Amino acid sequence: MVTFEDLVEELVGDAFSEDEAEAGPLVAREADGTAIVRGDAPVREVNRELGLDLEETDGATTIGGLCAKLAGGIPNPNARLAAEDGTVIVVLDATPRAVERVRILPPPRPEAPIEATAAP
Image (cartoon, rainbow, N blue to C red; front, top):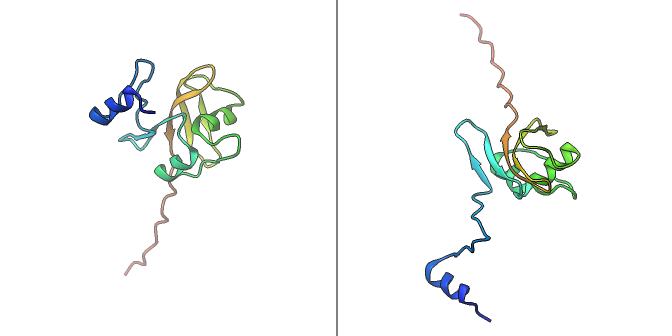
């Protein structure tokens, strides 16, 4: 069965109803090294995209789920959560039922040791 919406989308591309809002990308990198991430983003994809090692468990497969696990429930906006790998997650938007957007601050990268050079 083909709907009218299917036909229109074939001609002009994706059509959003008034109830649907374009959610934007899962991960948006910022110039300062942080990233804005949607709460429904899979932890595995975020790890791959940002080179992180955030924990993925059966109960926490999305960033929003990870935030809820770290906070012991749905955290309030502006909550700062520390992940085991040193990543800091700041909740930007949340409803009573879900974390919608977060800012991820990756852990500091270890400095390469400076090799001593012998004086001539």
